[in-house]
Image (cartoon, rainbow, N blue to C red; front, side, top):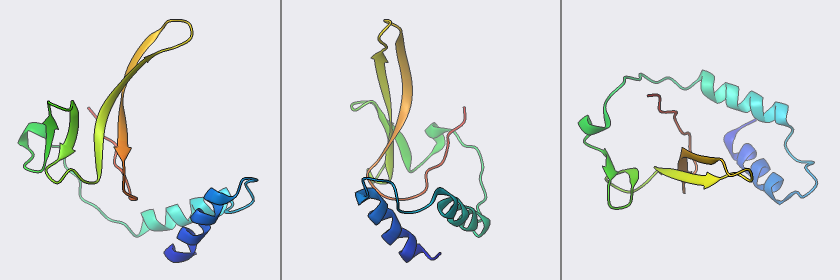
Length: 103
């Protein structure tokens, strides 16, 4: 399945209220194919050493100097039983792959 057909299928599936478009297996096979042909070299680095990413303390987010791709935000809330929680969340306005940050 090529990328254009997958995108067409994804758009169709988002409009499909009965879940009859894009079998999960086909989507997983496409993802595996993309992963198999994607090669990257990763190295750990501190946010403070980055010339591109930074913590915007006024907005309390981690973003890049172009304010593109995604931001890391914090959310907090309370469950029905009164338990409070806090966790990071990735907000993305563009389509693309996201990475996982490990601390």
